[in-house]
Length: 536
Ligand code: ADP
Image 1 (cartoon, rainbow, N blue to C red):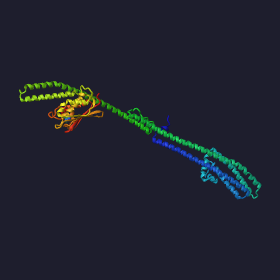
Image 2 (image 1 turned 60 degrees about the vertical axis):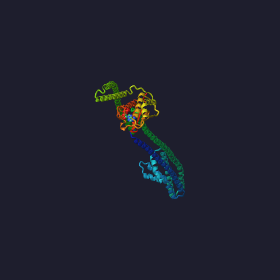
Image 3 (image 1 turned 180 degrees about the vertical axis):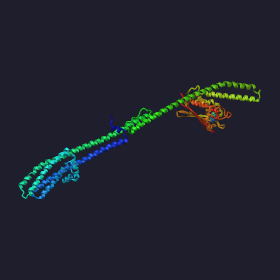
Image 4 (image 1 turned 90 degrees about the vertical axis):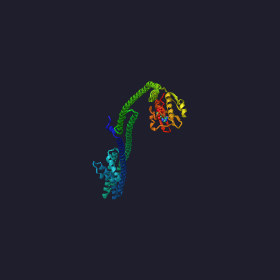
């Protein structure tokens, strides 16, 4: 079972904990100071009593001296001096008697000590000491000695009075005087032990007080230190422990582990922080799980769509392949019969019929080409097999194939060193062939074609370029040219069916890369393509 104090201390705010610690320290230091001041005052009062005892003793001795002198001179002035000296001792006696009453009159008590020739500044302290500590062992011993001394002092007063009566009688008896004087020495002898007893008791008392005070001061100082240290350690341990919990939990959360909760040991700011952190982590975990659900559902959808697209693409390719393959046969029959018609009936029908037959023949020839292109396109990648391809040799082969046109157009082809890479050789060759032949085909009328082929290593893949000094392409058509059967010119201007760059795009994508063109119309074009590293 925990004490209510500890419960309170655990849950109170850190600022209050610190105030409490500082408050306790201040209180203990105040206690220490109070003890110190009290002890100094007490010791100072003891010192005043020792001093007072000296005055008392001196006055008594001076008084006796004056009494002896009076016995010799019979001078009234000497007797008065005797009385005056004894007033010191009687003053102290008056104070002691007043203070022994249950309700002492402080004015009388003070007056007594003043008559005892004590310093006025010491008097209050002396009175307090007597009041507070009269039962204390040493002080009560000193009081007993004082009482004893006072009773002897009254003996001296009696002797003085008797002596005064004998001398002032007018017929003093010397014998009587001598008898009275003989009583003085025994009394003095009796007084000495009381005087010694008083001083010794006070001396012992002050030594005891010194030790006690020093011990007390030491204990209080130790308590101040220990309390301060304990409280400071408790507060800082509490903070450290709480923060460590939060730190461990936050590290775990950062790694995605939400199971490690931060323990809240207290109800202070650190405890509140730990609880808030746990709430935040729980919220994060909840949000994460939403996100996860959304992500996985998105991923599922993307997979589904990709599979659908891939299957549709395959279907289309299959369709294009089958259609173009199967169309070839009837088309061949049509053109064969059109040719036959033309051969057998040319000039036997009217002029228009000859023209129409001619158109029919041309159209069926064009259609043959289109269907063949389509078939080629759908064949790309069908029986692909990757191998290590030396692009330098590949380009050389292409140039050998294009030898005639290169020669006819006086084209120059400059090739920098190309890489050896894993690729589909037939397709890659077709790619270079299309790009190089386009560079020659779309040359400027008044300029010999100059072609530049090169490659650079970039972001882990190879980037190739085929650059020419041809007619160039306007910026708005730079993307359209890669679409199947898209052409920028009529066949009478430049021969072709508009499938070459569509082939190129399909081949590059087959190699995990992309193709694009940059061009300045009237100055030339530069075709870029990349080949990825993934092929094995
Ligand atoms: P084709 O060459 O049969 O016309 P392509 O698909 O190869 O078909 O090219 C599509 C179009 O892109 C071409 O008709 C031409 O207008 C343009 N083109 C292709 N290559 C070049 C080039 N090197 N310079 C200028 N235009 C080009």
